[in-house]
Image (cartoon, rainbow, N blue to C red; front, top):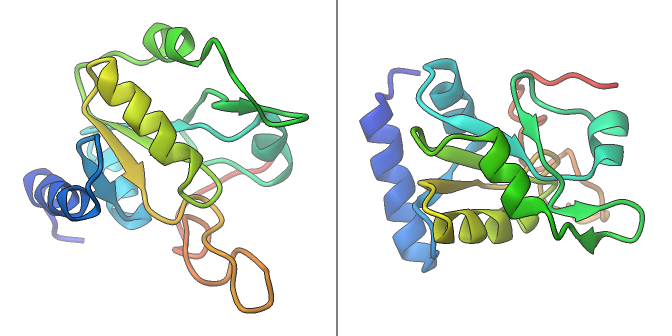
Length: 149
């Protein structure tokens, strides 16, 4: 991919404005990985620990649960854990299963002073016509690195 950091972030900002987001913008999974590879952003996976273990997780991602398993209750310590683990010197890219929790996490992070971005379609992507994920979009379908366990 020949995209520069500035080009990727400009596209993301445009998508964010078009979506009316309260955070810096929306990146595709491929754009997110490119930013991480270039050392231009930090990746935060906000899924549950069970999802990281049983479904997989991108390498170099920092895992901070936005909702905890079981029960998927909000993590009351999320903001403090984010501030303890992730500096505000680079953009932060938020990833979840399908791009819903990551929107909430990016919105919260923007309110804390982060340059926050949502990763579109998340790790597993949207449901297809048969009600299954990992077929239409997302991190794994994009062929990006991930590990399980």
